[in-house]
Image (tube, rainbow, N blue to C red; front, side, top):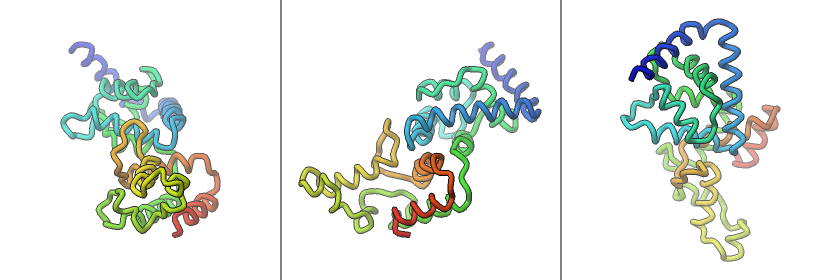
Amino acid sequence: MHSVYNTNLKLQERAQTADTPGQRVMATDAVSELRQQCLNRGSAGIKGLGRTFRIMDDDGSKSLDFQEFQKGLENYGVSVGKDKAQQIFAMMDKDGSGTLNFEEFLEKLRPPMSSARRQVIAQAFQKLDKTGDGVVTVEDLQGVYNSKHHPKHKSGEWTEEQVFRSFLDSFDSPYDKDGKVTLEEFVNYYSGVSASIDSDEYFITMMKNSWKL
């Protein structure tokens, strides 16, 4: 208990000084390092970290204390060390409460995207989400995604449903596939794709061609 108190006290002290230019640069660098580690795990890397945090969020508060935050990073295999983890936590813990809203944290962890990129990603998701319930499932893909040209469907190895599930898996976390894709997961996936494309025009053209927007 004493060590937890001391850690929270140190984090509050860090939060009070996190607005200095030097602290901001160090914390921003730490976030960039963590972001890169997630992206190294594939386009669904950030989404997978989010799922790890949600599993740890027993009370549904969408917030974690520092010990939970650090344990979540370690469990997911993207450790940046205790000092850098504290820098990140202090920067995100704006009110110095000793807790971090992990939805806001994941939003900041995504590679920055222009509003034009976000808009075309949202358009693609809306086209997929035929039922308008905010979740894309196998049923949504029927009539939108053509499975007939898939090699394994052509050969008779896969059914249409198996093709659809394989398609959805590409947007899902490789560590916990549930066959459903939310807008957040869709954006997380394409934020990873976006990170490797410098030109807004090229990214938007790619999305429009891919989804026939």
